[in-house]
Length: 317
Image 1 (cartoon, rainbow, N blue to C red):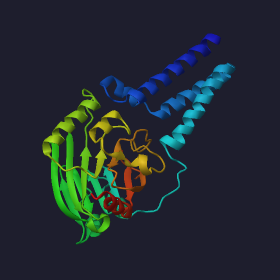
Image 2: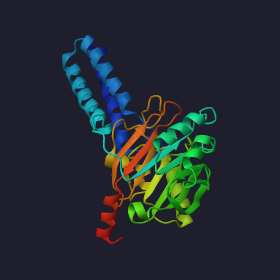
Image 3: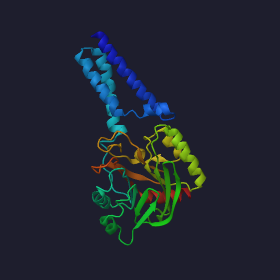
Image 4: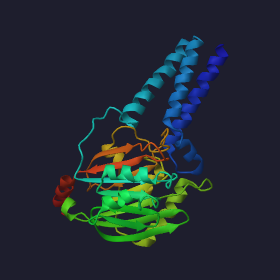
């Protein structure tokens, strides 16, 4: 029994160290990215089961060590990595919704359209939403004043006046489009928004994919974005994500509320859909909404326009 409990303890400790190594090294290399993708929830389950088993084997010392570790990690998981007790925040002056529609869009097009209309955002970005954008509910909701802008795999539905729509990158599964919108009334200046859709290639590291995307984006000679939205297939705070747009911060880190994972919607363990913003924008709420079908959760961002205007006036930008 002693050897068995020691084996359980050592294997659990090794697994925790491997997970911590992945969090620290992140996705800098192909081999390390698989470590960084180990979900925290899996480590919590392992710690809980190992603690329970060691308790049944009456190994008090090892039970206390793993039990304490499990408690600390669970607390972090619930209240830092996720913010399950965060109070709901008010709606902002400008709302942005993004939905990666990598599900059977035609079968649930009507239902998807009803959800979009109900959210009623100022800016709605659909990735692969071609079946949904023509739904009668969407057409009626848009009316004559709203716009439906299409660029590559992206569809932007907005109440704002478009200034420029342009494909920046469309190469080997990497898609980045620019939407420049007139937000003078809301924000005091125009908004430059990028829509992003990055592929998963198991033969290429996430870091290499991002470097390829950066090279292509640099060739496009595009303006610096205020907001970048989409399906990055990169985990939050990963090295590759930070290197793609180093000047931007994740909206979750600034104003996240609730569960922080966007994929897979049925049992989300990974945050791969992101909204990144510069320090001119002030988010007051970012949350993920379960549409109850499909693979991805819906992203919702609320921006405080008054703080944006004040920041612009102070910095003189």
